[in-house]
Structures are given as structure tokens and as C-alpha cells.
Length: 349
Image 1 (cartoon, helix red, strand yellow):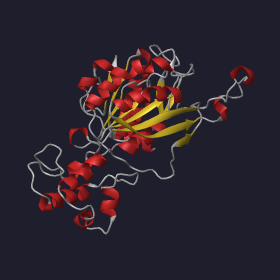
Image 2 (tube, helix red, strand yellow):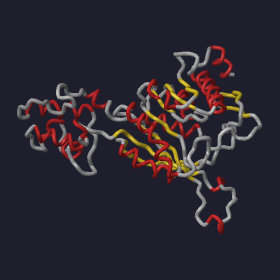
Image 3 (cartoon, rainbow, N blue to C red):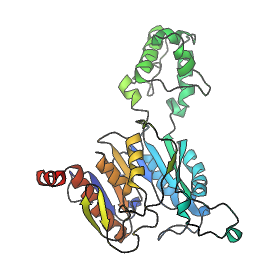
Image 4 (cartoon, rainbow, N blue to C red):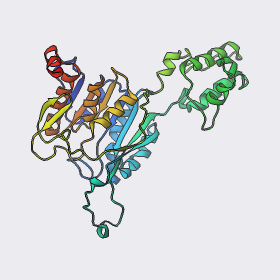
């Protein structure tokens, strides 16, 4: 753990399974663990074993998550596909797949087509999940909203008047097809208030998740994961593997804000993620002050991004050398996010 309770990151040196229970509820989990390619000590020898490898971690993520927690799962295409059914079974709902296109330079012409006998792979993926939204007793949220309205004995078209719109409420919030839309808090509150005022009397309040109270607009909105749209981005990200100053090679020294000059040794990590990519994930699905988990830290790129963007990072790394590099990287990121007066003056020169 870091030196200081006020630090914007908490680094655990060891097996993350030993510290999950001590970490606070995350707004987002960014997983970059085993790929089944023997990329690090403890990795599996093939994708077939990945489900068993991830199972205790998925169990811990699910237990700690709130209804608004998101999961970003980095892996190969077949690695993700192997783990996906287990994530769905655990209550994680798939949203989309982000593909990192590393470009033709990734193979640098070093391909024997007769031996390979397939198209060269220059991609890896990051699958985006949310907690599956549910109503009372685990009922799918979309179905629960419509059933609550019908339970009140109200015609579906009355939802439009309840929400103060011409036809959007029935068409968007109570429909059961692909056009269904999660009602914003103010619209949910309007539906709930109308149903409880005009519906038939029962012992259970309408649109209550606990049988006693009705969520406020703010409480309802908190059930949905955060999202900050970034214009110009799609789900395909193009950038070659790191070969510039961002690539870490054993030791670090700061040359300029968020620029790290490596020593002239071999790359510290076989598959270091671009900091730019991790910042996109953090910025999209969290807000300043939120908790970000990075259970398989490596060089802690997701946590560095979180610290730089004003979030609180909880990261674990079992490898001593990686943990040492991650610690220094996090320390520098924290210093640059909250520089002293002297550091601020020096960086301004």
C-alpha cells in the first residue's frame, strides 16, 4: 500500500485475491490479466484454462460491484470469447467490444504465410460490460417497469401524460423491444408518483425495489453506469504497439509532465497498453473522485490514467519488478496531478 492515506492510489504488492475484500466499491474495473499465451509467470498455456483462472476474480468483482459498476476486459479475441459466458452467468451484461488495431507494422513483414496459414493477427480486444440492470427479485429492468405500470391497473398510454410528453414514455420506457430506453431519474420519478397516486391500492408500493420506499430521481440515476461521450471515437482504436518514450524498459525518470524516459534495457512488459487508451476508458465510465480497480496491474497503466484524471486507483501486482516500476510510475503521476508549488513552477518553465 502507499505511504499515505491521502494518496490518490493504493498499490498492493501481492496476489489481488488477498486484498479484494479490503477495497471500496469500484465505479469501474479495468482487467488486463491472463491471455492464455504464457505472457507472464502464472499465465495459462492456452485459452481453454482461462475460465478457471478468472473464476475467483469474477466472483470477487461481482460481490464488490454496485449496480453502476462497469467492467473493461482486455484479452485476445478467443480469450475474451472463452471467458464471456462466465461473465454473463455472473450477472455482467455485454455492451460492446473495443478493438485495438496495431497496424501492419506490428508484424513488420516477419510472417511466413505458408507456415502460418492464416491472416496475421494485429489486434486485441477490450470488452465492455455493465451489471445487468434488474428490478425486484432479479426481474429484468425493462420487464419490471412495464409490469409495475400494468400492476397499477393503468393503460400504457397514460404513461405519456404522467411524464408530460406526447408519446415518448410509452414508446421508450415501457416498450419491450429493442427501442427500450432506460428512463432518466426525473421520468422514473414521474411514472412512480403517477402510479402510486392513480393506481389501484395494494400493499406493495409501485416502482419500489424494497417494498417500502420508492427511489428518488437521484437514487434511480445512480443505478445506471456513468458515461461521458467522447466525440470522434469509435470502437476501433488504431495505434501501433508502443516503441516510443512511453515504452518502459526497467527504470524510470521523469523528463516532462507525463513523459517517462526509460533506460536502455529491453522492454519491461511484453504488452504495455498505451496510456491514451486507458485514459479513454477511465474518462468514459467514471467521474472525478470515483474508485477505479486494476486487479492485474503490470505497469499500472490504468491506475496511472485514473490518477491523472482525478480518480482513486486501487491496483495490485504480484510480480516484484513490475510492482516496483508501477510504484514509481504512480508516484510520478500523483506528483504531476497535484504538484507542489515548486514543482508547478518548474513544470511551467
